[in-house]
Amino acid sequence: MTNILFTPAARLGVLIAIAGAALLTVFALVLHGWVSEAETEAFIAPILAQDLRFWVQIVTGLGAYMISAWLWALRPSDPDLTLFALSGLCTLVFTFSVAPPGGVGVHLPMSLLDPLYRINGAGASLFGIVMTVLLLRYPVRLPGHGGLSLIAVLGFGGWTVLALAGPLEGLMVIHSITFLEMLCMCAAVIAQYIVTRNRPKDRALAIWLGISIIIGSGIFIALVAAPIALGFPPFVDERYAFSSFLLVYVGLAIGLTRYRLFELGEWAFYVLFYVSAALLLIALDIALVFALSLDASASLGVSLLVVALIYLPSRDLLWRRFLQRKPMEEHTLIQSVIDVAFEASSETRAQKWKHLFQTLYEPLEIRSTGHGGSEVAIADDGASLFVPATTDIPAMVLQHPWRGRGLFGPRHKRSADHLVDIMRRAEQGRRAYDLGAAEERTRIARDMHDNIGSQLLSALHSPVAGRKDMMIGQALSDLRDIIRNANRPGLPAGEALADLRAETAERFAATGIDLSWSVTGDETISLAPETALALRSLIREGVSNIIRHATARSARIDVACDADHLAIEIGNDGPGFDMARLEDGTGLRSMRERLSGLGGSFELHSDPRSDGTTLLARLTLGTGTSGREAAE
Image (cartoon, rainbow, N blue to C red; front, side, top):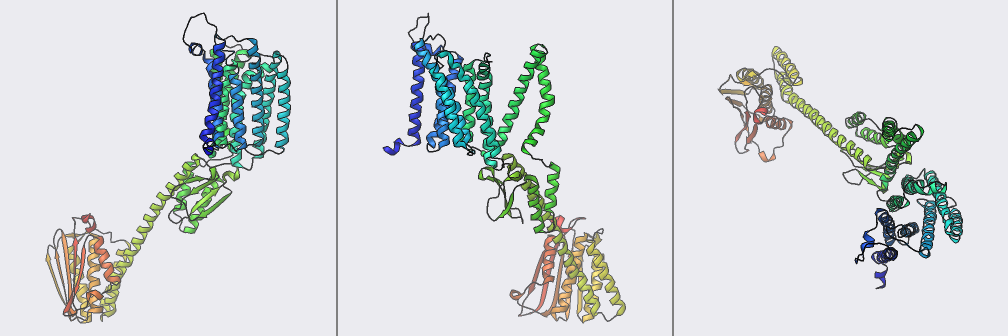
């Protein structure tokens, strides 16, 4: 049972009960002082009769109190949240205490008005004292914060006690006290900004808290407290101005919980710029009306024109100056990523990739890491940015951007995501390029082995000097075809086969092997350059294998061709061998790859129990196209 009483829910329940009691007290005072000529039996009628000013005070007080109470209920041991909760209680006090006296149709006796106004003054002054003490210690402890806090408590507190002890008319000095408290709060904010210059997390908090307090409390001070302190009437009704304190509590709640800390600094500047634009517009409008005696519509038009033509265009310049960041052009970023991706050395790629992020974000440290996900991520409240690994560049962590003066935010995560996406796409292009280059090298090596090798082998075994020279000349011609990828018009099958028959007969004759050659089908069909090259390579490699390995006395080559297919059968009467023990050499492997690439098939049959080995190949032809295109 004891543990239940000390849970966040229990603490919050007690605080809500306090707020409820205060609200009932306000309603009771309204009912007590209600004076109306209308006869009504409805108990709630006096409450419903109150105007907007009454409810603004109630909502402001309850909102500030509940925001601060909720945070304190979650972490009651945090001294900063305790101060925050105390300030919320002060706001509840000084808003609720003046709500009944200003209510519609409510007339309270002086015996009640006097303590209510004194309670209001005490709450307003205590709010300023608590806020000053909070800003002296959060987000960092300022030098001498203890002594300064004591001076604020004793100085403003003593002044407030003297004012409260005097006559009711003397309570107007409370506005002077709150005005000076506001100046002390601004001084504390400036000191926090200076002290946190090398601590980006704390500086983001200092900027956010400072702007929240200056805008929220400053609106009330500027519109109500300052004019009264200087002897002028307030610019707006005090009860409406109370609503500005909600801005203070929303801002403080976000800052004290460090919610989305990595965005607070930028949010603060956004708020500052827009509020500055609004204040500039109002100030210009008032100046034109009073100084130049312009009518309201003309002065507003001139003010809008000045803000639009001068302030808004200079806002981006101010933004970059405040944040000290120079964005890189989009085309420069893309070109830089592409340059990195197509760098030849993986080590150089990694160095240039790191240099790109160094230039873009100016972190104090970039370190490689072997773990992490596949997406860019913000860590350590914006102090770190994780960049995932790409193909051969390790993941890395960037720490403390802009030389330790800023934090990473969602905008920077999106830009890093964009860079990583471009890098991955560029790497895909580089891999495709490398694969194409590797395939081209493989093709050249295969063609040189199948064609140039067989030609030179035949020339080596040829006893006729003239024939030897002719074969070497053919080898050189084949070499030019290989380099040019045989980009010639289609060759008739009969012509290609006739050249191959003569060449093959010469090679077999030089080694004493009898040749049987037959061609069936349509020899007028046109062979695409790739198909003609594959046919030459296949027959030359088959003949070379027979000469080198078969110890055959005779060989046969049968070719059958029609409009759609080309079939080649190469056999010999040499001893057979065990296919299970066959290991593909470069020649057999290149024949398989070449035929497979053109949509063809390749088979080899042999048996150690009988003589003879047979090679069967089949190519798919297309009209004026290569076998590969026909297969596709």
